[in-house]
Image 1 (cartoon, helix red, strand yellow):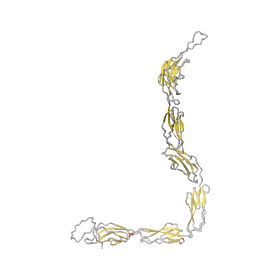
Image 2 (cartoon, rainbow, N blue to C red):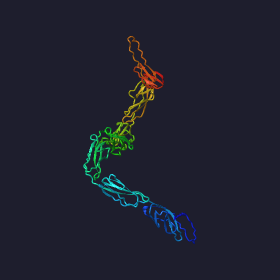
Image 3 (cartoon, rainbow, N blue to C red):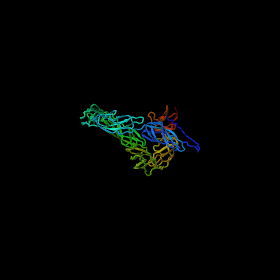
Image 4 (cartoon, rainbow, N blue to C red):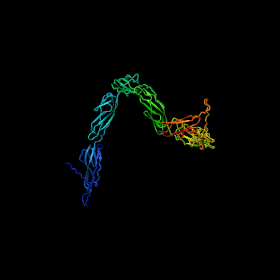
Length: 615
């Protein structure tokens, strides 16, 4: 008879039951689904919440999955089943039930012991026995080192002495997951007695191949040779070939035979390299200048070598300079040692180290001291050296020691004038030489001057000695005229030009401890020059007739922008030529475009005047 299960989900019930009713409605909350593994074997379920105290029982629609005793389940197999939580009637509450789902997942089998075993190599083979298991899954076996033993089915074939791990794996079933166990198999066998297998040394450029002699052994097993680094030395049969400098290990393995286990012996092969021929060439000491806080990069030329090996550069102090490849970055002032080593390549070995010194020197901008102004005769002035990060020795020089002389760390003031003081700080291993300048102006004492009396001069006269006032200074007098048409000053010489008067101004240049004088003025009167008529020499044929004097002549011409001035028959009289009231020379004078008036005076008398239009 098939059971019919009717599940009713009640979410909210409000009942008004008369007190005289014979029973009460049992309200059961919705139970949650349950998932367990077969490995757990038994579980106790927690029933859903209910308002009835009635006893609980469990019913299954798939009795193969578990059996129930009250709320305790005994798990039988993996699978799923609808389970019904049934609550018996109790007191005023009627019987009721709610359904949920039970899921039993495959379990992990419980295995018996898979014991380690020891067998002798001479046994040849033996059969494995799988460990006991709660699962009925099929077993398979695997050797983790098939050079010692191989497995087919459960038969182990012994190949060599040693230790090997044997893994037993049980396949999964509907009820059980896959699992595995591992045992250690020890295959015992005597090692053969083997003779020596000595190290060898080869040279790339001379003996590069050698035939190895196998060691003597009491086993008849075959030999196999291998090279740990075939790029250094290769092995073909028994022949070793040197390929590049370095070392490698040759392993000779004798296979198991006649009850003897395998054995491995080794020898070291050293390949001697050719020493490269290296010269420093451009890899020399050098200096790098930097501004503090601004790194400076330079490229390092490698030494010259006949090897193609790669050069490696290293710095002795990465805080001062770092190196990336052949690029050096200077970071702060100091000195580092840079080492260059060439790596091995082809037949060449590594080079010996080459070293250079790199001096990283800081370059700083010094702040010049303030300019100094003092009076002649003031006390010495102390030299204020700028603030500097360098420890270099300071020195000072003066552009004019007669004005400002260096006296130790002070300046001794001398004559009036201005001198430049140059402050220089010597270079050090970390800093380049630096310098700055400032000026010292010595203000001279004003000279005491006498009177500047008026004086006279003739037309054409040049005062070889100036009419200067008395002065306690030896400074040179400088003259200027208020009217160059009357009195001209040519090369600081007062010269009479035409009859009349003009004002001459004069001042005295600084000299010694005296500064420039005040300017004095006086009046100069230009008078006519004395005309002396030469007495003619009597002629024998006309001794009674005097010879007439020859009159001076002057002329001027224009060619492009050059005015040429000429004067003849002037005798000892003074000759003054002027263009636009400015004294010029007799001969060619370059002028600018415009109207240009030419005047020529001989003995203070105007004898030629003409105006030219210059284009």
